[in-house]
Image (cartoon, rainbow, N blue to C red; front, top):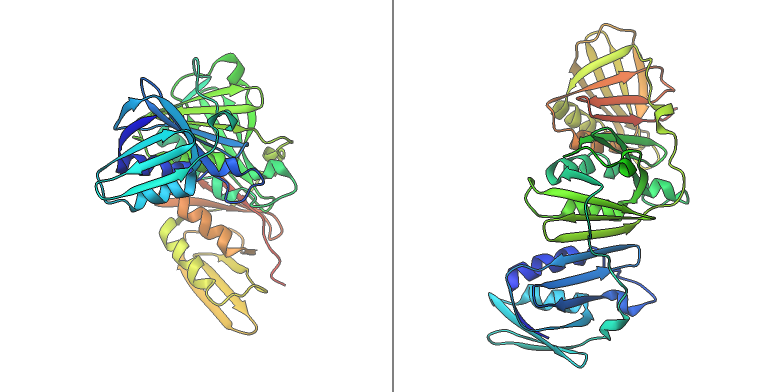
Length: 368
């Protein structure tokens, strides 16, 4: 194999691939990428056996066909550190040579036939959605997934299709985020009733695709896998097994305490009121009364913080405690200037809404 490629374009592709390559694995070949040059194009593959990625590299010239499997971190470092506009890559008999104007690198590779298969996207799409729309939806829910949980379903995002809407739902058991996005076209019959759980790692990859926001994401459901194609990137992922919680049951529908609040001002108030909290006393208290809302935090060993805000509220007073980090994370992803806060009793979850397509349920904490 012999190809010449634009260094910047290849570096960008490798940056996305490195998100999949495992840093630790009992299978050394998974720490490699596979580079394949065909008559039409050059593709680079990476997989950790759960999530795979297949990227069509732009701005390349194929001089000779072939493929090679080489360590991902070494290849990425060479391409990243090079100062050349173009580099040449030549591979034969398990050895890869990379040349620039004043540099030469020889990397020892592995047998290409031993590399696990990484799916391509074939046939028509079951679901189509604009990339910008999907990425906006991912940003509004991915942060609420469980980072580590023995309930594997909580480590992913629920995809639920209803009509021409796709609901993305994530929860870690203490808070829940749901974002609804509009599909580019009505899904086929199989996808119209789809309920799948996509791993957080695959969702994060989708959020990193750097194509134009106007590009359309084509999604295909195959047995226990989802395969996604957008521009020059194909992402494949095993689905999470298990049952996602019946999230509809915990979304409050009977609250009578409702406020419309300025997003940036509340974000600032939450941050400031949490400045003196500690690991042991990490909660802040929201005190809502007629015409005013007070954010307060305290810790016996550090002191007290209090931030007051004028609000349009005429209901019954209420005091409720929340984890400030969980509030900060949701306020960061609300793009509107205002959001709605709904409250019930101090031992019931808070409900945050932004427009018709986003909601967030947050369990209260006991401040003692």
